[in-house]
Image (cartoon, rainbow, N blue to C red; front, top):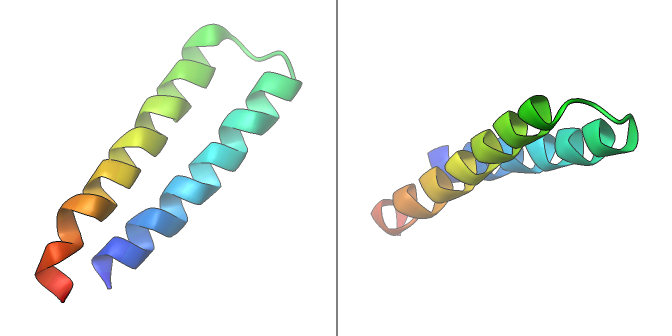
Amino acid sequence: MISLVLFVLAGILVGGVVQLVRSDATRFSVALTAVLALLATAGGFAWWPGEA
C-alpha cells in the first residue's frame, strides 16, 4: 500500500517538473522537484518487496 502511495506521489511530482520546465521556473525549483520525484520512486521500489 505504501509503495502505491509513493508511486502516485512520484507521478504527481514528475508532472510538476514538466509544468515547471514549461513555465521557465528556476533551475533550483526544477531540480528540487525532480530529486523529490526520484526519492519517491526509490522509496516505492524499496517498499515493494515487503508487500508481496
